Each structure stands twice: as structure tokens, then as C-alpha cells.
Image (spheres, rainbow, N blue to C red):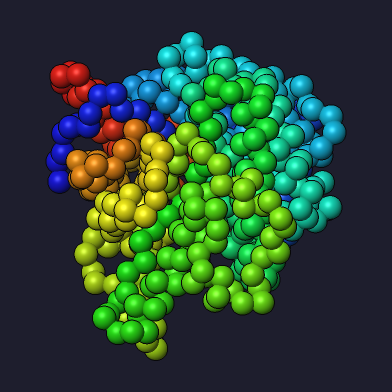
Length: 443
């Protein structure tokens, strides 16, 4: 596939990262430990036994990295603030040295003409709050609102948008449901309660930031997928319907409809969350944008062994099925179910086993992946879905959570031994694709 840039103007083109995955400097300048620092220190949690102590050393190399971002010609950069960097204990005193880092980063982005899209929480809860119960403790929701208010006070007029959470499904289900992610709990009942507290914290943070800065553009980022039955059997259809209800609708319905999906609530039974009076009103308030992260669909087979998905475009280095048309299907489904604000595709990309050879990284499969997903996105937009931007994941190869550094999502290769950055062919393609705007020819 060789597509040209037919996206309407204006349209935001960007790249994305998160704090723990790239910053390093895990205890520098007063930063407190996060649950991911703790999780990495426990043997067996990270597949390559690595951690985020150095990562991409972005904390010290941010000027170089912003230069790379600007050279790509993108409009915007999506990144997260590390809560324990700016408030080591998650409550109490602010760490001015931590805020100074983000102040310098925002200044550098502005000088290069790149707009900042900030995420408040990309999974790195201060360990001190975890010691008090973490997201299972309802008080953490209020501490998050305090943190959000302070970020809005300091930076609200300097950033293009603020998202409360990144992928709360992962924080709840991988952090508390099956122990794959920090804090490493495997308790489905706790996972469901945590999901409610994450949504409540979103609502409380929205109110706090609106009061602090009424003009700020505020939203949330959700990882989403269609759930497709493997066959027409009743069992497969029921499985797909429940999967969609317990994942996508579980977070969308409270935000846009003020209640949890009945199907999922019934399925959770005694594990359903404790909801206090007024919670749903706090959660269900207008948002200015919805961030959608799309990587794959859910393939639902109740058979033993499961019916595999048809071989189409293969899988990524994560083992995830490549299914670009699922992005179009998802967006059209959401449009039919909800009264949506403008959407940003806040993450989309693929891991591949990239190597530098003769100063070049040939990642043709990633280019094809992005092209196919952009074609699906454009199709959805032409059918009336209001999508206003696309952020490619990721700017840099980085710490890929429990996979460590073994999986590379970046369009820029990082040699972790030397911290040398090398533009992959996909970065050059993306730059040229973006440059086709306004009639400009590719460089």
C-alpha cells in the first residue's frame, strides 16, 4: 500500500511517549519511587530483568529528542508527567526540581513550534500512595485530583490538551487482575473496584482542572477494540458481546451515559464495584476530546481449542494480530453508540525486531502497518467520525513494560548502550507523509 496524505486541514500529526518508558533518572533531583520502580525490582516481573532507571535517558537528553520531534515535521508531542517526579509521595510537598524539568520541556517544545498534549497518569503511581492502598483506596482519587489541579495551575495555559488517564483498562486489569503490570496483584474483584476508582479519579480531576483553568482542553485516553466472534455460534457471539461490554463499554458508558453496562455488571456478579452516591455524576461530565489507542481487535472463540483468527496481515513482534480495518469498525461503532466529542488517535503503532545495518533501520512492515491504519482511519472520517489527530506510537524505542527493552515500537531506534538515536525508515516515511500537506511534495 502506498497512500498519500489526503487528510483534511487542519489535522494534528504527532508522536507519543510516556514518562516511565523514556525518562530514566528514576531517583534524580528528588523524584520519588513509583510502583513500576518497585515492580521492576522484584525478580521475575520483567522478562529481560531490566528496569526504568536509565531507559532512554530522556530526562537529560530532552533537547536532542525535541529536536528530533521537530525535524519530523509533526504538529504535536504527546507525553506524560511522572507524578512521583513532581510530588514524590503523591500528597504533600511539590518537588520544584521535577516541575522544572517539565517547564524546560514545554519551553523547548514551544520554541520548536510543537504543541504539547499532556497525560497526567501513564501508570506510574507514587509508591507512597501504593503503600496506603493504591487505587484500591478511594482516597487516591482525591490525591489524583489535587495533582491534576496543580498541573493545570502551572501548565494549563501552555499545553494544547490534558488527558487524565492513559488506558485505565490496563491499570485495572493488568495491574490488579492478572499481575502482569505494577503493582502485580491478581484479584479480579480488586481489578473491578480499581477500574471504578480510576474513573472516579478522572471525574474528580476534570472538576478540579475546570475550576482551576476553565479554558483547558480536557479528556481521557482509552485503549479500545472491537470484539469479533470467531463463528456465528451463540457461544462465540455471547463471548464477543461480553468482551466488548467489559472492556470498551465498561469505561465509555460511565463517561458518556452515567452508568455501567448492564451485561458486564451482571457478569461481574459479586465482584461488581462498590459505588457511592454521586459517583456516576462525578464521572459523567462533558469532556473536550476522547483519546483512542488502537492496536488490535479481540477475537472471541468459545471453542476448545479456540478457533484462530484468519491469517491476513500477520502479527507484530508482540504477537498481536494486525487488523487495520478494526480501527474503522471501532470508530463507526463508537459513533453509533455515543454522543462523542472530537477524537484523537492517541496511540497506534507496532513492535518489530529492528536492527541497525549500515546506519539504517529498514522497517518496511511498520510503514505498511501505519499506512493501512491511516487508510482505515480516513475511511472512518469520510463516514462522519470526527477525528482531529493521529499520534504514532512511539517516538523512540523504549522500556516496554513487562517486556523490558526486548520490544521496539519506536520510529527512532535507540542503542541503549550508547543512547544513540537512529531514524528508522518509518520515521523518514512519516516525515515525508506529513510534508505532503498543503500541496508540499515529499522531501
